[in-house]
Length: 486
Ligand SMILES: C[S@@+](CC[C@H](N)C(=O)[O-])C[C@H]1O[C@@H](n2cnc3c(N)ncnc32)[C@H](O)[C@@H]1O
Image (cartoon, rainbow, N blue to C red):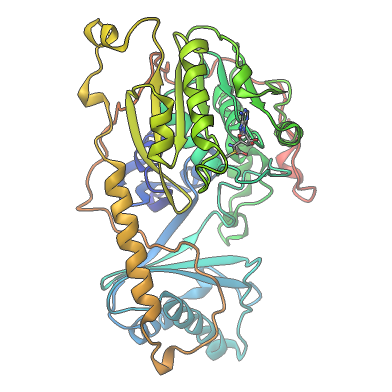
């Protein structure tokens, strides 16, 4: 099959882990950019990328690159595209835009002009125009502009890939599934030791951990991917990918999820049931202050509350208790904690062996790794397991915070700029991300990062047994091919 260019979008901080996932999936030409990874592959790889990647939020397929420095120029070029290659008059469509350019101040206006070009193309040819659908388009086009470099892409995913399909309910502040999976993959936990999230809320981290431990595809529960409506959709090929569970594996350790809130535990159980993982994860109502000693090599990954009200919510007291429990109950294990306030981290009172900047939504957070030893940290540093500086991530969260502040200021300045008269149009489709991604810097090649790897090495994710028809239920009833396993 012919190879083509693709772009996997992700959250800031997850680019390297996504690049590794892509390489493991067989992608070629993998190059890291800002909140995106570009790669090459064939149609099968595009289906696999949507179905298997845990840290991608969407997969774009660029089909036209051009230079333009005004929205009218974009219109003129788009007007000449053979749109019938991608859609019919009866298909509804949407256009998303991301603009990173002084020449194009309003990304929505560029999207309107692309939409106009598509509508005018069909109107000229058939006297009618296709419908624009914001909520449920058959096809979504994406225009990305960086300075005067423009790219038109087809969005092969549709709904963001973090919407796995297993979430029935959420508690307040659920962690995004892509971020949860990214944190677990970054930790290097691969299902070869016990795993605990002691403040699991709606269960996102334990559920993503179970999917990783069993090597189950995160796309199993999705009812739909946008590429299924494409003209060139190869149903047999996708059926083959969907039904191939040869890489799934048994999990011989335990995954536990605790929360002090009984409602959270009920919600987590419902979500795990929807993912067919209720037997794999043990959920229990328990306060972290009652956390009991666990087996050596246990890995904790958790996101404790990190609201704004440090004092009123006694967040500092909570983090102090977390530090005390880790020190006494996680000996020989490691904990990865994502939080926002430095003051909270300070209260943990343990020295982190890694600090990884990550964004949780718009919040610049940090994922910190704590290795708990039976003895003093200095003894450890002097011993064989000396921390290597090269193993630690080098980007500092302060840089990310600084960048975020700059971006916020820029957005505020943009918002103040007056619209030009010709830009005063009603938006027809919400643009997705607030901040545009930048192009890869000089096509920088991906280098394997060993940063923050824990003590157990993955054994190449080798398949170890054919799973026997344990596929969780699927929401779609009108797509029989997904269940017709022979
Ligand atoms: C930010 S939420 C976790 C969200 C979760 N990762 C999800 O995806 O839904 C923090 C959770 O910590 C729980 N929590 C707060 N204090 C706790 C404590 N002392 N022991 C156990 N759980 C606690 C809260 O009930 C809440 O569900």
